[in-house]
Image (tube, rainbow, N blue to C red):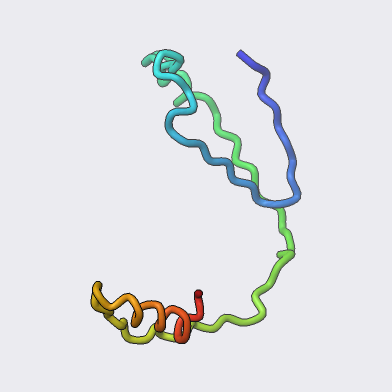
Length: 91
């Protein structure tokens, strides 16, 4: 078993994993004896330090509501191109 390393960071830190990182045949299933021994082990609770926040929100505004949807007939390509060019300004 590898040695466990502890780090002290000046900020909150989260680590996340995903399924499939470990192969199925490499998984170790805990036995009942280990589970019962872990229940008796004392749990050390470390209180968080008082820290100031490094960021602050200046302001927040809700985005404008979206307009009505315009449906264009599938056969009318010219109208679609006109709407995309003049109103949406994406082409």
